[in-house]
Amino acid sequence: MGTVTSLWRHPIKSHGREAISSTTLIAGQTMPGDRVWAVAHEASKADNSTWSACANFNRISKVPALMAMNAQLNEASGVVTLTHPQLGALSFDPDGDIAPFLAWVKPLMPSNRAQSTRIVKVPNRGMTDSDFPSVTLCNVASHKAVERQLGMDISPDRWRGNIWIDGFSEWEEFDWMGKDIRIGAAILRPVERTDRCPATHSNPETGLKDVDVLSALDAFGHQDFSVRAEVIQGGTIEIDSKVELI
Image (cartoon, rainbow, N blue to C red):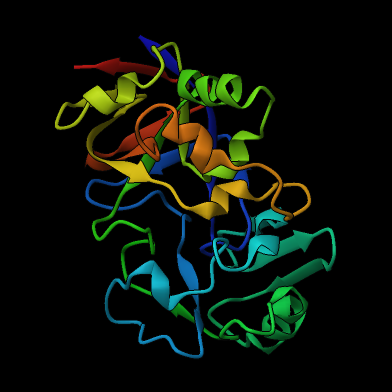
């Protein structure tokens, strides 16, 4: 049996992270407040009708500086406050006038990259990288294994996961596919491993690439970290909630 050590949501895909103390999952949906919005670029074909693949959006793997962004979602008003060490703070409504946001984030965008033009939102699900509504489960022991391979500490924020759990063996989560896991009052079922990209090379404090995390993963025979799970039964999860296979 393990425990939840931290919970994270990312209101706007690749644009900030937010630590939360609890969440109430809903069966068949992504974590509330997680990747509700995504920032489409000039070449994007995404719209507000259905899920779209990550290539349609500006994201950390293409704009490393975005990794240094933090976010706070006001659930009552829908206002998101973003902060970045180079840009300061901005509060805006992603469902409203986004011109201030586009101007604020523009200095981070490489000149040879398709520029951000609009924000996309899909009903009843977050814009996860998976083509199904998923919640990512991250194993503290696996993170420590990567740190040992690198010979240095790295921030868990590089993985941009949702639920961090401790009390299991390293990489044990990869054996959970198709099994049910009770976390707090919710039940989740891991469906697939999360394949990783160069976004993990960026430092969450500076937004600069500083560590080749993918090469460290290669030493384990894969480039995966965390598992994507479906919510089978909704319920509340809090810090220190119990985690167990059922």
